[in-house]
Image (cartoon, rainbow over all chains, first blue to last red; front, side, top):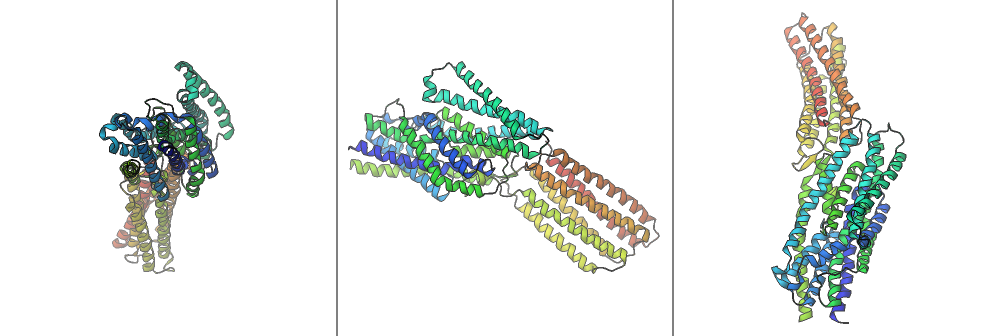
Length: 412
Length: 224
């Protein structure tokens, strides 16, 4: 076994640790609104999050993985591929440790920030400032800033729409029955377009964009028709009060929870698998190729790690969420979930590694600004942002320390 | 935990509006004390000592004040509410003014013992009844508004009807107060007694006026 193989095996372990942490740390953010609004139980949340994170990671996750592994730093500047491999491993380990510490100490850090910060850290030490693809890095950092605003805007729009066209209407049940299937159709068309454009299976079909749109439209129409029948059965009495509307949205929240879990898997798996993929390519080719597909067993490994993390540690967090009594209603929860999931899915499709936590927080702020919550504490938002900002330098510093140590061990 | 799940950290633990219900409950206690005092006058002293009643009202008012301070002082700049903050603060002030007016009413009654002319006794009791009804109607209006703002209810029309009821009762209070003041001025009694009674009646009217203000502010809170 040469050093390349050794690092490959170790990175698989570190990648799994990172994926495990993702599951343990991030599941609460994506499922909190649904469990808090009593749309799903803790067990259901764990099942949905586990299975759909896996599906998202395996079938939709490759695009962001490529960005994480090769987009942030330009390995050509570092002449020795072994150094890149050690660096990637150091970054993975640093991010894994940092996210694990955060999970155990209840700090709201972003795993995405951790891995991007860690890769940048080793890159700076290994090859100087030139090694970092600042344009790409700028885009990623910008996406971190934009994504919460984007999620907030979507959540704001959706909640305002729900209020204006459903809650403020005289026949609100009738209005809910009219609009709910439309939301379902929009959700399904977004997911189907993502599958058609971003998955290997979808790409292999080589469909013209008009055909893809047609398929998405057809599926949306089917979903709309099915949802119409289904929603009609949820509320039979049109004179029922607010509870009737909430019941419709409670069922829809199950759908948005799936949507969040799928998007989260697609986006977050890259944080664990990106560096492993880079190490794998170096170990195999002894060079980090400019263009290379991420092997699907790695995505499976990432998806599996996330699912295990959710089942073991995430379950505990969710149980606490389940016990927490909130006045969260399903209409509000739906708006938050939809805003967050759409943002994350769009970002994944653009190859941008954004944080589900950011998007969820953005969603809460959006509904809060639409005056959907009785009280939103913006002081907490400042504290959360402070942790997000601090994550990057801390992860970078940890990565640098591990990298220097490993370099010293390997090169003497 | 709240930081771990930013979702819950961001949401305020308790709606500041809920504190208003606790504060509102003090109004009923004050009304009951005034009622007892008035009965004491009318029935000719078979009641608790006036000093004691005054003390009771002061205690209620102090407690209500501390509730109000607690609501207002725990309203940090960073807290974003479902209603405009200035509306919320104005409401707390108006609701507290009802209690202040009640305290003043009892104060005027307790300054010195007076004999209330027999033919105005009934009117005074009716006026107080009307004020009590008016303030009692504010309770459902407040609770309905909170439920509507929190999304627990969608009965906007029913909530608006609660405000209308308060307004209608306030009109009744005003009508009774005007009639009563006219009657008191027409009485051939000591001017000091007239002055004292008029102020008592004015304070009761003030309670109705502030109750109506509260209802108006609640209406603004649910404006689209």
